[in-house]
Image 1 (cartoon, rainbow, N blue to C red):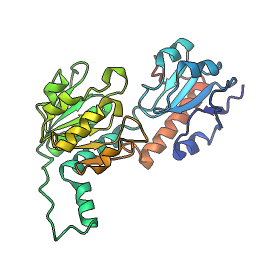
Image 2 (image 1 turned 120 degrees about the vertical axis):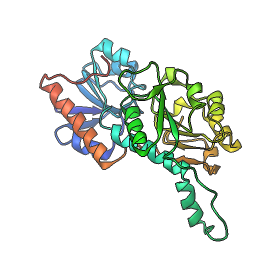
Image 3 (image 1 turned 90 degrees about the vertical axis):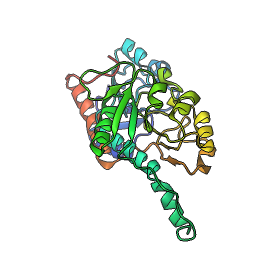
Image 4 (image 1 turned 120 degrees about the horizontal axis):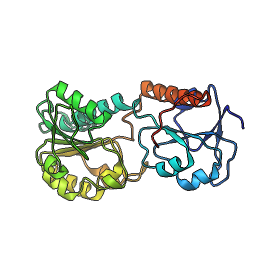
Length: 305
């Protein structure tokens, strides 16, 4: 076994690849083939890895994951096989939280719409309707993990009031807990999604929740596209049943429902919340460090534990 090799299961960002490849030989995986002899592999949150893939990698002991989400990785299968799963939850927190607030401003203050308005030569002959003040909003955060708590801190610093929901109330946080997402949506000006994907949150935001959010409400999603019933969201946006939405994630990335493109009251981003030079460098260093620690026999954070 060549300890310097890492099996690359999916395309990874070039900035991360350069750092990880500085001390390791990255070897592209031939999909559907057996790949013995690799103790370390790297994937992404979107590509993941399932039990069938693990069967084809009999020597795998460490799976590096570019990204926070592990819903596309079979953690139970990894645990059974004794495979450590090292994702990067801490490295993406700050920039993802910033982007969530940025999307809220982009929708509430109509920033993207104003840009299109000027570029189209409409300034002068027409007037852009008034925007919505963001600093006085009450926002509801769905999922008060590390990213959610950082969004809450950013929002509080701007002057917003913060409520939240999740599987359970958290100790030691200064924000009010609301047990049901529908009740939360009915009490806020903006609903911000920062929860994990997976079966437990599939279509958590459905037509009923959007109705509770109402015609003055804004939806921001920096979690997973699966959390939102997109058909219901498009219907609500088109009908003015909610004010607008800022979306960084979609159900079928990199594709998206083309009906989004014709809506003025939605801001669309290409799963970009954590894409900064600083975060990419931090992810690369974290994954490279995990590979070094594993090979030196030191403890490595394990999301499958």
